[in-house]
Image 1 (cartoon, rainbow, N blue to C red):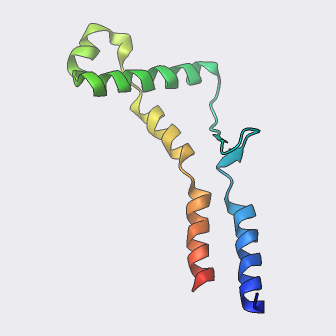
Image 2: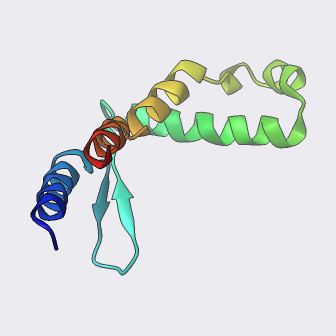
Length: 104
């Protein structure tokens, strides 16, 4: 390999180690874990139930009737969106920007 290509490869390996942090490899082949933070079990339970409720509503397409049947069935959309935001791989997106710079 040329010196220039070797330098690019070393930069790329350094960037991978620094920015590919969202997915953690597991003991299983081709399997990764994505983690997000919750305050406690109650928040985790609320998140899981809200995700299930949202899934039910999207399948039934009957949102207004669902909420009228059970007042505790309201969905905390902000909690769901916040969780999705935490799962979004920003480090990896930043990495891809740097890869574009290295390749040019």
